[in-house]
Length: 102
Image (tube, rainbow, N blue to C red; front, side, top):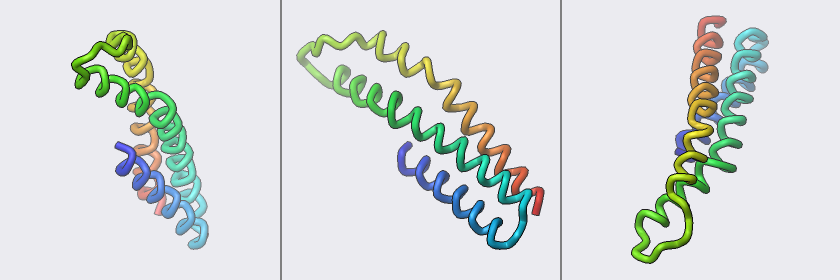
């Protein structure tokens, strides 16, 4: 997820920059909004989801109990999934509006 997430974030930033250069104000604003939403998604992913994923992987592949509670880890991961999905949905809608504003 980090590579597609970063690629989408960079593409939204490039779209915003290109729209600003082209003086397409509405398109640029929607692209900036998408960029900001994807930045928020990246923060949640990097700070919560990725570390939990690494811990869950370690717990599930370890033959020796690590002391980590897999159910607590899953609850932590579940606690941000709706926020991450919602941010991606809003970013997608914003990019669709950027295309429509052209």
